[in-house]
Image (cartoon, rainbow, N blue to C red; front, side):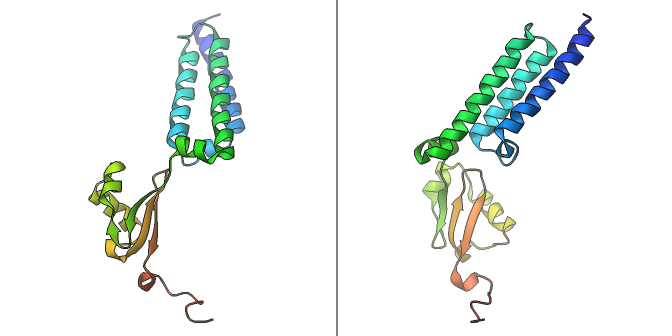
Length: 162
């Protein structure tokens, strides 16, 4: 069979296989990714790329590798759902960066963030002063969750006894 026909067949076979494995892994794999999911996605794509271009002569070995790696990723996801300690290892835990309006510099260093990067994350949430923040946590996926001090929170109907 000509090499270009082989390449076309491999491309469609692996595109279908990747689509199927992504469906099995679920929407979490294509949403915001944890570090493990990111590495897993890159590895699966790399295996597929190598198998498509024919560097791996046996197409079925490439398919088996993708299926095995996808099933391993699925197993890790299932274990993470069932075990908090395993989930903490795989996904990580949130880190408190601000407490009572004060930056916890040790935690900032541990996460390899600068004050400027923290300030940028706060500005994205329309917070321009660290002192206005009661509590801020850097989530495992890199988002910053903040709680403003009571006096800086917007008024709600509950505040007005409505």
